Image (cartoon, rainbow over all chains, first blue to last red; front, side, top):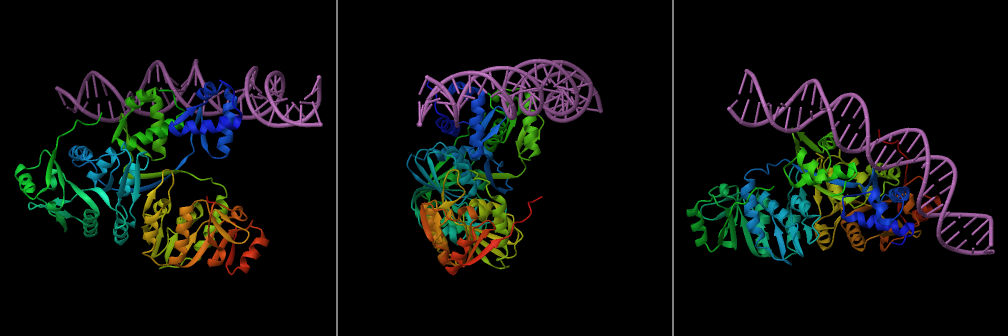
Amino acid sequence: MRRLPSSARQSQIRRSLAGRPGVTVASLAREFGVSGMTVRRDLAALEARSEVRRTHGGAMLAERMILEFDYRERREANREAKRAIAAAARRLVRPGMRLILDNGTTTLELAALLRDGRDLTVITPSLAVASELQHAAGVEVILLGGVIRRGSPDLTGPVTERSLELFSADLAFQGADGIGSDGSIYNADLRLAQVDRLMRRVARDCCILADHTKIGRTALARSGGLGNAGTFITDAEAPTAALRRFARLGVKVVVARPISPLP
Amino acid sequence: MRRLPSSARQSQIRRSLAGRPGVTVASLAREFGVSGMTVRRDLAALEARSEVRRTHGGAMLAERMILEFDYRERREANREAKRAIAAAARRLVRPGMRLILDNGTTTLELAALLRDGRDLTVITPSLAVASELQHAAGVEVILLGGVIRRGSPDLTGPVTERSLELFSADLAFQGADGIGSDGSIYNADLRLAQVDRLMRRVARDCCILADHTKIGRTALARSGGLGNAGTFITDAEAPTAALRRFARLGVKVVVARPISPLP
DNA sequence: CGGGCAATGTTAATCTTTGTTCATCTTGGC
DNA sequence: GCCAAGATGAACAAAGATTAACATTGCCCG
């Protein structure tokens, strides 16, 4: 390989760093056919422009500033059931779709599965969903605005609603805090219920995700009924009697098969 | 897999932990091809920064659930000047005000100073500003929606603009990528310039923050002129000739006195 | 042709990181 | 409650990385 001028080599280093988590001086020296000293000088120059951060033995991408939003949440409850439901929901998604992802832990599991999606647009009021998908190459994330509630990753309020009105989507995925035995969809928060209602209006189709513990439970606000949704996905422990009743409302009921735990 | 320098390995560990509930020392050692002792030292370092919590045999994410948005940090250049400018800007803020905080590192410094604000409302398109203020008891944070650009903490686009239209504020704080010698305000990004323009419209008053290195520089998009702003704050190294010229445009020019570095 | 100049390679002293050993401590099974 | 398997951390040695200073190379231009 022909030697490169130093500036070309430096931008090459920077580009190759874009994919990897880090590079070693030795491997760069081998790759460019130069001595370790030269590579170190290149890295020093790049660091002076704060394009990379040097480490002992190599370099990594410049220190990222990390913005943290935190919330206390037991994401663990029924994690397996939620994962199974999310996997079933994932199968409804086709490349090119514009999706709405609601707040909630089940939709968050779905978001994780969408990371390898192709040409998707995800509209969401959830910082958690946005955080999950921010690095997904094939997914454009549109965060709806709203008020930040302390300790909660969800944006709500009039801003959220007005933002939502700007869109139309192919499919909305929503969680629920309770599914009444008559198929009513309940939310624990009034404002979230209002946002949910609006989501169903701007989406051509809607898919409700709820594990079996939600069935037969009610919560503060009724945001609608399963009859307004296209699909309802729950896990294998849901009582079949209720599911039959729901099916008569016109919604397509899907029972997610348990999946093997992650390695 | 080739060996990574230690710091790169540590940030990898941290990232991989973001998905899984926990990791074991043995699996990390195998994955990175290092000894258990090395992994333990990495985990100890990460725990010292309270990024993970160690357990017997491995580690898990730190107690709280953290949603991270990261971006390549812009240069720390002129941090002291920016802090001084932010401190001067802080003095314009009174309890009860509704503020707009623009994107940018200077406004981010201002956000940090607003954490002890009383009865404030902060409207911002910046995830960084929102992150900074999410725990401030006396500050309600309204995040404008928009498209999440990879590696950038700023939300932009039509959603941002439409959301902004819902508000009226007392005072907008804006940074700038360049201040022309005729007082023109320049932005490096066209969409950000458009958002800035709109901010000035919905705010009763506007304050431009720019350190002296920005003066005399131009950038892609002209978003307006200092004549449209109420106040312009810069640092002590700004050329007085330019400042006199700006003052003739009708803007109040404030020169921030240097502050002592943080402890 | 050759001086000047910047980039690169080399050497040697010094510092970091890593692996190993071993005594001690945790954890989970019984 | 006790024991065994395995995890931990201190200490030390070895491998390898870093830096500064100096030597060398290659190239531009008079």
